[in-house]
Amino acid sequence: MTDDFDVKQRVTKEAATLLYFGAEKEYKQAKEKAAKTFGVHFLPSNLEVALELHKIAEEKEGTKRSERLVQMRKEALEIMRLLGRFCPVLIGSVWRGTIKQGSDIDIAVYTDSPEEILIILKAGGIKVQKTAWTTVNKRGVTLESFHIYSETTSKHGLEIVVRNREEAGKKRKCETFGDELKGLGIKELERVLETDPTQQFIPA
Image (cartoon, rainbow, N blue to C red; front, top):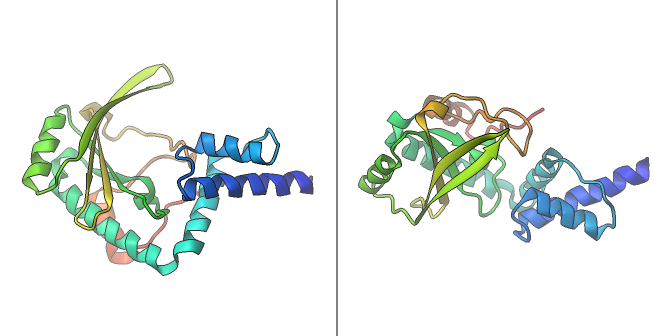
């Protein structure tokens, strides 16, 4: 039992290490590669790997990580205010407080006209680098979203996900942590920055 636990721990750490250093981009591939390294067939959960990844980032980056998180949250707030009428929500690792070197800012907005977002970003001095439509199938339902890629003045990556208006407020499950993907709206992010700017949102 202890041996199995130890091996699982090693697989978890290896998968997280692969993700941290960019050897793998996706959790599934990182876990499979780590399991193959140790010659086992069982895989840790995404949550276990995510928590280990968070731990590695904390150990490697220390106080600089906290400073970067606050800066990224402040930059996210500026962009969210710019897009205020589209119900912007900060999601991803900047919301969670689990950033690592190379993490970007992820913001979801809701409108049936993605071109409106592009016009506002351009007017706000944000240069769009790339755009792409993405289609995913969840429980038999096809969901389409428009992704806008840019970067902030501090050179942090920025990804804005444009979803249909009817999706605003709908509950989503986080595929990594397994909990509800709540994120932070403008008022919530303002409150976090005022009271506890490095607050983490990780399942207990």
